Length: 252
Image (tube, rainbow, N blue to C red):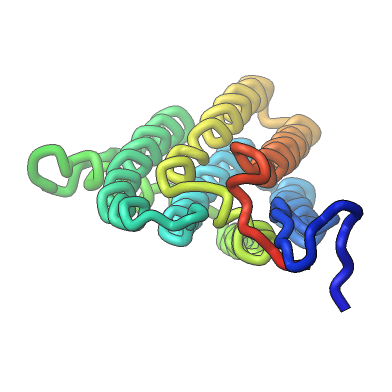
C-alpha cells in the first residue's frame, strides 16, 4: 500500500533527488587505501626508491585516463539529449590527444630527471603525432626501469579505480548526474596537484639520498591526497544542479 505525505493529492508523484547510497563508497574507499599501500611494501621490503615510486605513479595516469574515457562514454544526463551522446564522438578523441600529450610530457620530465641516460625519440611519427611517438618511447623506457613486482601495484590500482567506477558511478548513479564534457576535464585537477606534490617530494628524497622513511612518507602523502580527492569528487557528484526539478520522478 502506498503512503502519502500530509497534504499530498492521491496518485501524485513526488520528485526524489537520486543520490549516492548511504555509505555507498566504502568498498571503493577501502580498495583505494589498499592499492595505495602496496607501494609501501615495495619501499619497505624491496628497496624501491623515489624514482621507482614516480614511475609507478606515472603509469597510474594511464589507468586514470582509461577510466575517464569509460566515464565520458557512460555519462548520461537526465533527460538524455541526443546532442550529449553525439558530443562523445568528439570529446573522447580530444581527450585521448590532450591527456595523452599531458602524460607524454610528464613522462619525459620523469625520465630526464631520474634516468638522464635514457634517450627519447618520436619513433618517426609524422607531424603533430610526434608527441605520441615520444609517449610510446617514454613508456618503453619507464617500463624497463620498473621492478617486476610493480605490476601488482598497477593491477591493484586498476582494480581500485574499477571498483570506484562500478560502486559510485554506475550503482551510485553518478553517471545520471553529470555530462560527458565534465567527465573529460575532471581528472586534470587531481592529476596536476597530486603529481606536482609527489615530484617535489621525490626530488627532495633524491637529494637527501633517498632515505626509506622519506620515500615511505611520500607514499602516505599520495594516499592522503588520493583520499581527499576521492571524497571531494564523489561528494560533489552527489549534488544535482537545479534542485528537485532536475531529478527523475519516483512514485512512492
